[in-house]
Amino acid sequence: MSIDFGRPVLPLRIRGAFSFRLDVRVTAVVGLLLAAAVITTLVALVLGDYDITVWRVVQTVFGGGDAWDRRVVIDRRMPRALLALILGAALGVSGAIFQSLTRNPLGSPDVIGFNTGAYTGVLVIMVLFGGEHMGTAWGALIGGIVTALLVYLLAFKRGVQGFRLIIVGIAVSAVLASFNTWMILTADLDTAMSAAVWGTGSLDGAEWGEVRSAGLSVALVLVLLIPFATRMPMMEMGDDTARALGVRTEPTRLALIVLGVALTALATAAAGPIAFVALAAPQLAKRLARTDSVAMVPAAAMGALLLAVSDLIAQRLFAPTQLPVGIVTVSIGGVYLLWLLAREASRQ
Amino acid sequence: MRSPRLRRSVPDAAHPTAAPTRLSGQNLTLGYDKRVISENLNLDVPDGRVTAIIGPNACGKSTLLRALSRLLRPSTGTVLLDGAEINTLPAKEVARRLGLLPQTSIAPDGIRVADLVARGRFPHQHLIQQWTPEDERAVVDAMTATRTDELSGRLVDELSGGQRQRVWIAMVLAQQTDLVLFDEPTTYLDITHQVELLDLFTRLNRELGRTVVVVLHELNQAFRYADHVVVMKDGSIVAQGAPAEIVTPELIEQVYRLPCRIIDDPESHTPLVIPKV
Image (cartoon, rainbow over the protein chains, first blue to last red):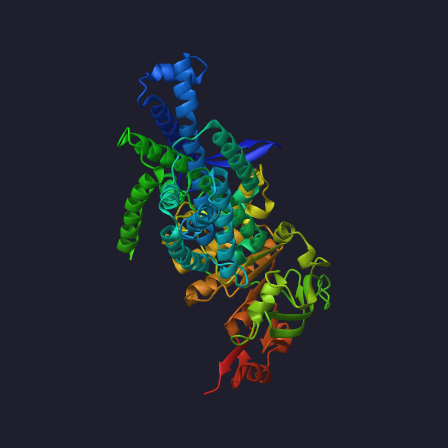
């Protein structure tokens, strides 16, 4: 008695303890993505003005190396590389959540207005209160969450439907975007400049403190997400079907939105708005792993790899001039969006 | 391929006239927001039988089915499942006793048949028990019963309407509930596939002992396949009982405003509605 799933699937069981169905391709894809992310990270630790060999970097990472090596690799390069992995994974999962909820490859926190709202929060702090680093982080968090809440409430009509969420999100972010432009125009030059810098999203100058706080909080949200990971694919079959199967849809949806927004909020607070990772990672992962729904784990691995690669490009492309990573992800994302549109067009 | 109809004789010793029921609605007022659709509905779903709910469009058939399956909370009255108010039971607990195929279900693009059927196991699964031997057996049984086993590895998107509907039914069967409810499952299917599904429901009932409740459009199919028929009009239940006992030209004319004759279906010996010219 074995079921033909149309692809290799392994049951993974220890009687009385656990039982899972392991999709061989998904596991392999996640493994490869993680391996690629590790290699990219290693490259990011090696490349730079300070000449160092791969072998010395490996030694340094595992506790060896001289004081200079440690200073450059551990104190300078490593926080930035790790932060890229952590925030990339967070954005990937966040995108997977919104695309699953809206059943739409365009449903991502960027499209739903979160980033624009976070930017509005930062502008309010910078222009009206002349805020510092911590101030802008809080501004981003509050701005983004308030916007997400607003979009959710405006889209609410006997429950929230995916398509309405996207349309309302686009409308709200259009309003906020023009408000943002007006704020920048009214601000004095210095404030406008630093607001614009924040608005591109950058990992430059990341420190261990940020890595620790971002890592812990992202890990916490991911743990909270575990019970919802199996409900998410159920919700994709429509509310009636999900409820018939025993999913309490409205509380589940609210929890998924809150946790999804929290992941984007953490990333935005740490690095500014980084566009397109949340949009592209889940879909690219879905196509590579050939999963039936957008799945969180492959999306996390893909997100981590995408942001790590993007940040490597941002650092090295015009070195010593540093690009904000947000510029790189926007460029890559633009190509992705064109491909997506062309594909959808050729389908019809 | 059609199996000969296995008719069960009306009330016997094991099934007295007051049929035992695990699922019932009492004094239900149903509606959406402020709009009331049904008032004062009373219904006992007879155990181990096939019940068909029929009536003209917008008479509240589907609304009643949604209430019975706790998709819609009644404004007043209660739906009882095994003696308990259905809305007070844990969602997964209900889903282990009562299965429902709603009117519209969305198959995620790129999903394969076996994966979709396996999703019916959700109410039986836990965080670290995602694919037990019991899950596997239930999926195999559900696919065998619906003859979807040969489609197992295929993409749901590539299937015909009739095949797809059988796959959805397999998903509901994989839930392994004694009670199964179907909301207009034959809509959009041609006559061959309609009959195929109705035969499947009969087999579910006769061979697997499931209690089946199905909302149907086609009167003669309902009378042929159901043991118990619930006739609705304008939100009320006008008549219910065995087709042979309740179906009269007056009832059909009252409910559908359609002058007709009732003759004996020469194949199944159930009432057959013939509209007058």
